[in-house]
Amino acid sequence: MADLILDGLKPSVAALAAPLVDHLVANATTLRLGISKSPCGALLVDAGIAARGGLEAGRRIAEICLGGLGAVSLSTSGRFPRWGTMVTVTTADPVIACLGSQYAGWSLAEGDFFALGSGPARALWGKEALFEELGYRDSADQACLVLEVDKLPPDVLVARIAEECGIAPEKLTLILTPTSSLAGTVQIVARVLEVALHKTHALHFPLDRVVDGIGASPLPPPAPDFVAAMGRTNDATLYGGDVQLFVTGPEDEARALAEGLPSSSSRDHGRTFAEIFTAYKGDFYAMDPMLFSPARVTVTALETGRSFTFGAFHEDVLERSFA
View 1 (cartoon, rainbow, N blue to C red):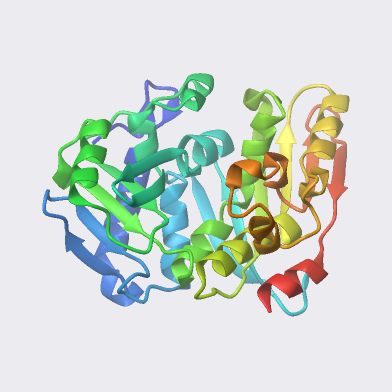
View 2: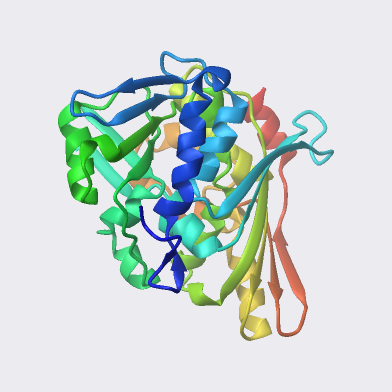
């Protein structure tokens, strides 16, 4: 097992997440999860394909995605009268937790199977250019990867994931969370802070100046149709998400970051995600990448204590999407 602190400076997301994975598996019956072994020996956790799963399973999976560096909670709020359950995310290290672990940056394909991998195994693989910018790479003898899929991955791909992580297949855990499932809905909406960090990176704000952050989005009801389910989980953040970042550096740069972060800065803002997705004929690359961000963002300049808020919630869009 990797040390909890990698190189004495940065935390090991694999080590921190390992006990969370063990606890998830140990409580599989209570959490309504399916546990099986792939032919090559990896552990497969079904959180919504054949097994029912649930909200609590999704909450725990979201914390695993954060590499053990974050807390995810479900609570009630009066922000949106009809959609009163909020998914709230806090982290001890937002950049490593969100971008070094939670971000779905590992593209996996085998035959007609495709998935994006997120979670602590990404930092073992470490081949995304993002890890060079973060100056971060993990080391461990076991790994966990979360896949947003509705079918089991081919075993040849499972074995390849283990090989890419430099571990034995029996030391690999894959958690499978369909978009349309309760668990999948929670773990996707729990990316509200990660979405803000990813756009912060896209806006070329220095990530080493992001000290802390907190985010919350309303929990949508799951939808059996994939496009509708994907739309609802995205709309939760695009039109109902709220994030606060705490940064160092000049106050005017904190204000500029706050102004550029909200989803309202995108040309595609104002329609439900399903409407946008359909308009672009399902081509993600044709969509404005600046759309993927919270509805409202506050950035606090720590040196002066001033905060800057831009963006707004759009309950009307949420109503069209969630109802």
